[in-house]
Image (cartoon, rainbow, N blue to C red):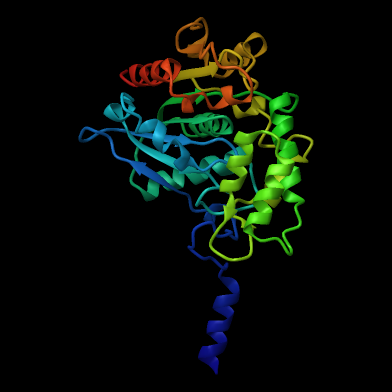
Length: 314
């Protein structure tokens, strides 16, 4: 009886933790990240950690980095990493960039990655920037594709996404089958690209539909006065090292006329580098799909991959 009592006390004092993909961590420092590893085409290459847009799984970048003619894998091994609350990584209520940064450094420690280049798309670029700033001894450069250190709260594109998050959160899953949830997403998510991403976030492991992402806490975060997923605070600091930024000419997320200065304020090495290490391209792309310019099979994408590879040569 004494042994059983001691065991019971130990179980009570030990936070519950599972290691299933997408499980919920009891404490923020217990979040475990997962991703897709793309081995470079040469031996003994450094690492690029790449982070996706909100809701979208990082594995969606596999075709881009495997694209014929994309020389990025000649320069780096690539981890397509799902940050907390999406993809196959663990969930936690916090979206604080400091907590997300610590997750990524823990991932590096677990995978014996001493230093890396870090970059991302959309919100992933914001997370990448904050992570590098918080851990300057672990990162050699920051790459921002269609995102970065910008306060997006008043951008129409962010407000559109926030409305889709709210809609999907409020779908009553009771009584719906998988096909019913797909139809509901189509009805409430007007942008076909965002609809396809939300459909990817539906858990297909069981008969009853559910969300594989932490949609409930994501919605709560968007309802804050200063959502972590939208803002960029001055106290995050600046990144004095190598930096690269690209966005579409008609981007709804990075407005060239108003947002070059925030990039300069956070990336001092980019000042005076437009055009250069901060640039626009994809002149022919307009509308919502300009945000996913890396998926278009034309010369603009070939130019993008060439620019990325050339920048990684330093």
